[in-house]
Length: 476
Ligand SMILES: Cc1ncc(COP(=O)(O)O)c(C=O)c1O
Image (cartoon, rainbow, N blue to C red):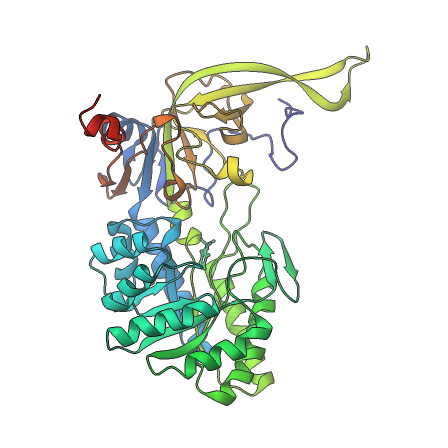
């Protein structure tokens, strides 16, 4: 069989359209003897029968292992260069009380970016001292609660926040540890990074203004300055952007050391993961080793002590651990003109793109619509020997941009009623979910050792109607 000319260049025509490419699927996903997809020993059909579809299926041991693996790698590599490291889990990727406890049990700190995320972490019962609180527009009430609850570190994002945090700390009679987020001018996205003098974005303090803001922090007795912070972007595959950011921040660190201690340096998150067979993610051990090397060599060059380095990965901890299970409803073959190709008769050449529609879509995964993010997919309920066909997986929303998987090969006999699994949906899918078209947000189940349990329940129609004041005020 030949490749479909409508397929993007990166998508190889597969030998076997049932194959689960290891880097893209949860660690404990496999096909059983009957060819059905299983996660940690539970079949897709059993999960769908018990919990319905769409369904987020999280491989619990995979999340725990990735959290522990990140911590071990960073601690080992920074110990090698004579320092130490802290790994924060960036809760914005996916946060529930269970997940907060898993990562805390793995020894990670947790980064929260709103009062709501803070509330979830606190409800999990984790020690507030392991939390870092981010945000470019934290409300005074959010700051007050964070200080009152004993959040370990608040990341100051603008000069205005210095006073706000200091006042809250004074009010509660504590000394609040703070970092200062910098706009380092380095912005990385996937394989490229951009370095400018000032990056045009809302986060952080421009490098030239940083010394003045740090001096203001140090002058306030209710604040303790512990270091600089930068986050350069997401889904990063090359270390160059981190290297450049570390260089810039350490240069400033050397200047700041003249005025007092700067014990830590936070280099943010953004480590890329594989969404498709074409993505090659860097192993966390390699990222940790290159960051340790660059931080150590820059500190040696500058003649300063190596700080404790913190990082904040979110996507790389939860992203690959989870798949979304959908049921296929309708299928249609659409004849599409192949761009730039004509047949012998001069007429445009056409090829078939199979539109496979599922029972969720942009309400449970906004990333393809938001960022044209690529995903992959497999039939989950069975394996098939049918020749691969190029498909586009669409959702059920009233938007033509409601695409779940732009391009994938599935067995050509894919049919209504098949269960479809989309892997690598653990990060920024459930957390970005909406109720568009009044779809309820799906449940999240954790699967471990042959057992599945709900960790976030799905929304029912009653949930959706419960906030409609036209009903609840009795005037319907
Ligand atoms: C400040 C900060 N830290 C960490 C992260 C986590 O990034 P990722 O999930 O790509 O690792 C983000 C993501 O936007 C962020 O803004």
